[in-house]
Length: 241
Length: 339
Ligand SMILES: Nc1ncnc2c1ncn2[C@@H]1O[C@H](COP(=O)(O)OP(=O)(O)O)[C@@H](O)[C@H]1O
Ligand SMILES: [Mg+2]
Image 1: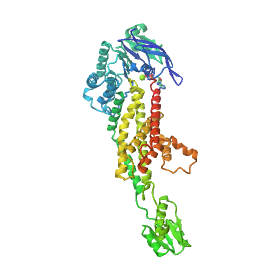
Image 2: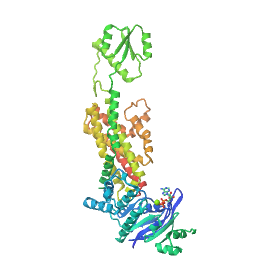
Image 3: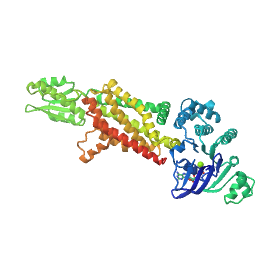
Image 4: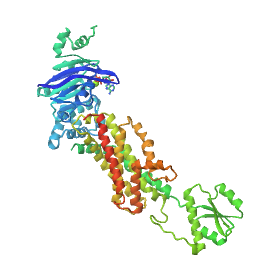
């Protein structure tokens, strides 16, 4: 089967409040898939269920044919959390060395990969600075670099471009598209419409419901609108102003 | 390898945090030095009042390093005693020495009794008591007696705090979650912490013990390596307990709240205080305090020169504590990741 991710009837609630309501979703190998939704709609919750950080109340998630959670799966997934989880006392390179070792990289190979990912996120010149001295955008890029270290088959990125300036955002998107062209499957979340436009397919999420899943063009067509923003409103059951 | 990577990361973080390093290594030395001054400090010079004592006795009393004041009647001397101008009154009743102690300060009482003993010995050589010491030596100070417990306590206390806060930060900054999104095992996380911190705690234990013995001159007749071993076991217990309890704290401040709950009771039951007056069932609480076993072993080694055979029970129990806490740690991580 070519589905790299299969979500079946996932629900999750916190303290009696439903945050995700019976989500079904399939993502195919080699896709760049975007989860688009306003903040608080449940994107991060869904992402954490995919990586096995959180447990659903019901339903199942399968990744690469294996049921989540599974330790060996984590080796094949690259993950970037919404909030940067970095060791501020250490330099960028030391952070990368640490995570590279956790993914089983060592020796020359490890150093090669570290340089490669630093180049991708344009931090090569700042690799020996402590992370405490990094700006928000630089931390975001370092987090992305960490997720790329072990060349995973599946990248799960939670709001990867938040706080990154437009020029760099462009170059990161170029890199993501290049990775997809090389066969990496990418699932990311965003609340920026023009980013969602670049995805192969997007899932619209609102108040814990996945209201529509399709390519950006098909979504616009289906809702009879010209922008994704309007499509989002119409397909979410809203009325255009 | 992951365990080693985690340990290396912890060491690197530590080396950047100069203040925490100073806390681990220098604070115990500073406090020990202060306590050394408090317990060892000035030789005590008691103020002794005498009432109608023969001149030779007064002379001998004077030579024992005491401030002697002679009074003509008991009432006058009593007044001075009540006003704390005197620490004791010595008089003769029917040829027998009659001593009234002020009694507030136990170490003062002891000092005076010691002087009286000397004076009386010289007076009646025939009933001179023969004093021998099973352990320790004449003039062994309170510091020598408390010292081994204090060494263990400081190792325990600082490692408990720092390990607790470090692990808490790992959780609250989200790095623990990020860490657990890698293929690291929960046991490797705990193992990495043990290894990374273990190296520092070994250094800390060596420094504290060396300083107490060589610089402060703490009484020590046992094996230095054994002292280190016990110290290391004690800090491993502190490390595993600190990280375990940090899962029940949500801020650094809440870690501090563990001090009265976890640390202070251990001090009471560690042998620093005599528990004979306590209800027997309460005394038994000491059996669940890691510091009790550490202190018992440290004292045994340093004061009584005990060998590894004599303290093996303490070693097993401390190891047991560490293993149980480490396993609970691994289980507690399930809260963060189910596998
Ligand atoms: N651990 C949690 N405990 C309680 N509520 C939570 C928890 N995690 C998320 N939520 C709630 O779930 C909802 C969705 O959050 P989230 O998935 O982070 O949204 P998004 O990532 O789309 O902004 C929010 O209302 C949030 O408050
Ligand atoms: Mg989010």
